[in-house]
Length: 242
Image: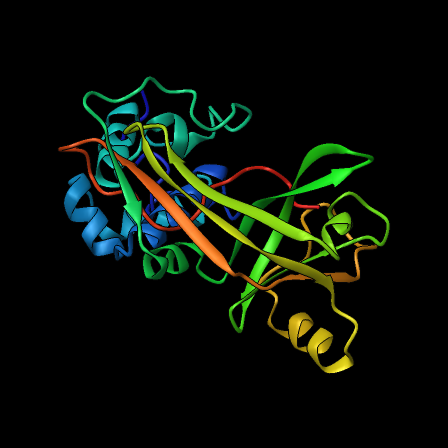
């Protein structure tokens, strides 16, 4: 079995950052923790937490278990063992609470970007598409191709749903935004969206048409298991946007 420091700072450094490192850093940032705080929780040195995040470390299973506990998650989540599984594959929690979220908390959970699902009607048939969205001046905006499925939302009342599922603790939240959708044609508004967008579409280029949803209704729910650590507000979706 590899020791906690078998590939630590004292060894020859491996410069390729691993999936474990990326997932560890992302989870830590979602929880708003410093490396020192994670190190204290995991009974490790802060320098080793940094090494795990930035290099291709091979820690022992004992350290991984402590690190997962420190980050309120599971070893499978940290190592990507469930990356191809749908969200919510875990078992239901014991005595879950369902809470109704107010508009302010819904907007906080939406944050400024993420992956959501927009519902449209194509040829009288309902369809749902994942999209990379940004929140810019209280407008939900996403890029797509003209004539594509997500573009069909323009000119209609549209619904966009965003959620986060914490399989490790069988809890999570969802937010639903409803409002008129339109194609963004103004030069200045289009440029503003381009400049402030957090990310290009995950599926690549060729998507230059902005669709803006101007919310008229926002609602949400949270499922919480008493005694479980609070879930972070950030989304950990794996679906590619359109």
